[in-house]
Image (cartoon, rainbow, N blue to C red; front, side, top):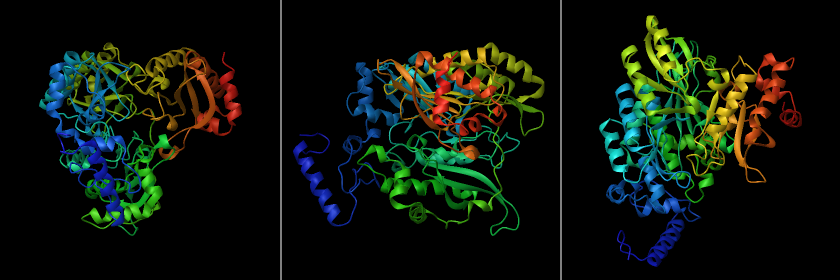
Length: 567
């Protein structure tokens, strides 16, 4: 007999079928389980194993089991591997016989004292390294089987959390990394990411969604956050005088972005006052909870709810969860967004506050040693306001440096082995974890990214923005479809690692999915192949129009031919 329900496996299967048939007959949806209020399965199909796992044993009710495993030095097995992700703990075997810990850092804002605490956790319980992620977040790798409870306890005592950082939950909320210091921003997004973060933490219904869920807040400033690639993106806009709504700053709501599935978010047709944004996010999430596909994880994203029900119906149903009425307005009511500076997340730049600058830096392959993070935190505290800011471009920003101290602070950062003046290649280089730490990845993306950057910097001397994104699997953690050059890992006929090449992607004003050139390049040959393509661009008469324009004027066959013309 099952200890959690009192039913045998056969009895549970019978009851599940009976209740499903009864619910269908009465026109109701079937709850996944008492620990998942509000969640419903697709009415005509059986729930996935992950949904059954959430029903049978809620992941937030397994602290004692995690503790018992830790005491025995034992990693989780079976569906408990999935349940551990609700706590931000990823057992990443066979890539690595260890846990990876993913955090929740709303808006990517990290106080110096907490950064020092994370460095200590990485040294005592992990491999001593910390990865910067594409959701303005941090990951600690190499955590042993005996340490999950110690890690989670210390994390909580730091005032941080990893609750819901993985699995079928709302991922780290991203916001403009220059929020509050950007001379060009329309709105400081920090209060919004903070408010929604705490709403999620304190509403159990906001966990155990049909699949993962991404939300971004763009304050309209210099650095983009890829808001249109998220399930929900909020983009600050200004409405001038003489319109049907009072002039001021509002947010447009974008819905259904998931570029790994070939879609950008669509404008929902509403205009939100800043004070309405958090409630709007919660309302859309509740629609997703009700209608998301719990029988097929391939279609368990908001994009597919919108495709099935229509954007207008999703927005209309969400209104039932709002304390206000939607303010319908066309996108054209707002002024155009100010241009995004593709290099504003790195280097030294003046802040909105006179007499202060921020310094953006990159780490080799977006990985920090624990002591590098600790010493960065010290610099942020002694030279600035004690604030570190993470970006979706896998870079890190130290803010609020007095002008008189900028040169000395930049030199101290460089002395840590970090770059405050990276080349355009390294500034735009994004790589997922790769097969050194992810069981899904088919190539060592971080190693290949460094080899690529070394060759291109040595041979080309590029002086204009260019984004190259390497992702290890179709989950597209590195967003390869929105890069100038996107590289998706694959295995070649001889089972060696290689990459499919995509070109011409972009987001925001340059929105477009990269074209698949239908070419697989061996990882070992990648640097010289990409060099050949970029060299042809730089030598072309139309090179000044940018790489996206260069590839837009050429056929797939022409571009593939450039890859074959390696020097």
